[in-house]
Length: 146
Image (tube, rainbow, N blue to C red; front, top):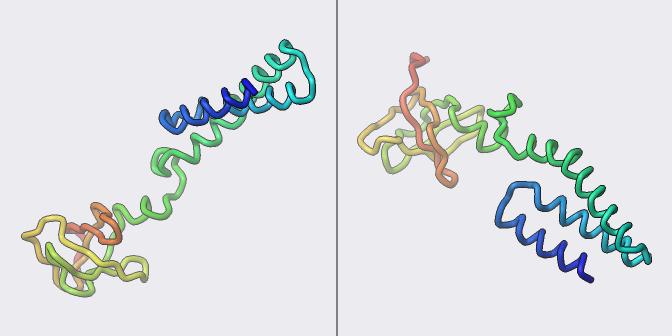
């Protein structure tokens, strides 16, 4: 029972630290609880805890961290929100500080000018500088209008 309580406590601690480290010790505690349930002695339980925790940290943590970091840091092709930031688009409906429409990779997005005083005309090329909810904040791009 002590191992289960420890595992729960460590899992809760991981929720507050988000280091992807403490959770592996929770896994070790659960494995030790399993060993205890099978009748293993305290020394065996401690060994199971140490081995499972250590192997989990060494084998799984690097994989999780690689996938938890932004794609820009890992050199992988960005997707989702990361792919939108910095993208180039073409203004479809006039973009002001309040509203507008931009086309990026064939998809239409609601957009606003990053500077509320700025106005972009249909056909202007803009770059996404930020995503707020489902609305893009856009700014000038140096490409000529086509």
